[in-house]
Length: 479
Image (cartoon, rainbow, N blue to C red; front, side):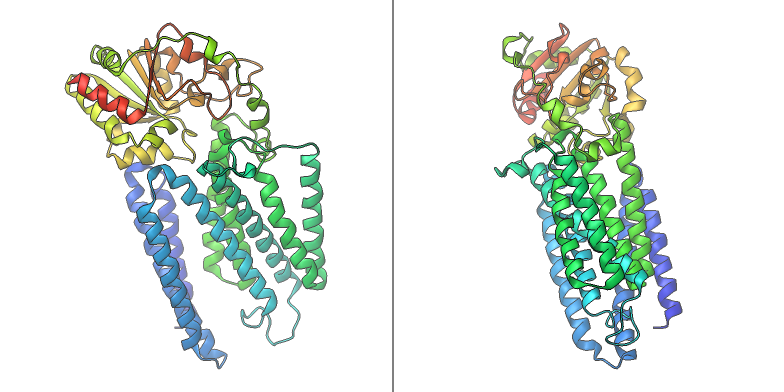
């Protein structure tokens, strides 16, 4: 295979990746976007395998053994990925995404270590024993450091998203201590210093010390971030994994890695910015753990002492049946209960009665960007019924009923109260609806740790219980 053909095929794969990002920007084109992504990756993998054969033959080495290892790794990795993707529940999708990010970061670290150990095998140098050029050392340092931070940070994010591990670092609450930011600053400067030392001297000790500090940095960056900011963390780590791949791509002079990594890195950074904007947060404030700490201390101790108006699923169904317009607000509680199919059935029953039903999606609802959209798409909810926050907020005032299923912080009016830890965060203005129905398991606070005044309004009816069971009872009562 000629290098011109390799370049052409990599270009085709790159175009497919760009089309994949374009398609994934909207639910109606997401399937096509995924298809483009799979085609592009197939082209890239097969082209790289052919390139391995060519380079081995050029170097006078047997390509059979090396390619055999590559193919074996593809089978093992691809099989494991397919198995996990097939078995993963939609509620566990954020953890799977965090796991994948960690693997990308670890792969970048391994490749960097291999390239430093055997630069000739990667054609970074022209002969064995030759020093790695300073530019390549810088690229290896950056790729390895970002990869290490991505790996350890993603492991912590995985634990926080899972919520089933008792180890404190994996708890959803922020982990903070005195001098934390100063420690991060010192470790960051030390990591950069060791990396520059490696770049100047190609000293292995400096390289591995830099890697060790980068792994620690990844942990320290993520542990002070509370559960409310996890969607931003997921998109941020996605960006990191892309830049790690791009850095390694420069070192290996691999255009495909550079392009793919840059696409992932830039798209992840843009998504992180969008997420922060949706929460009215500074990106650096989120990175420094500025969201969770104050909120965690703001939990109202008087929650159990305040009265709320509660009702049954039958009561809620009666209210819904007598409405003309209903807006459904899904949250993570709906995902945990796997109630999306029951919700679609309820919406269908209401629509049969001539009631207009719409879904309102907050950008950071759930535990990763687009989590609610994915759940509704799985239940085959019509796309024309699903509206983003900026498109639906103006309609809450005319809605007869807003039914909130497992959401909390994204509908909390405290976002309009100065001094509140979430002040300024754009919310779904469900409190403007004529009647509000809220389904929750209990009166527990959301990830931000705040009581929600919406639950105590005279027009709000609380329906306690598992979302799936409650919605299924509503469907029966509507019939």
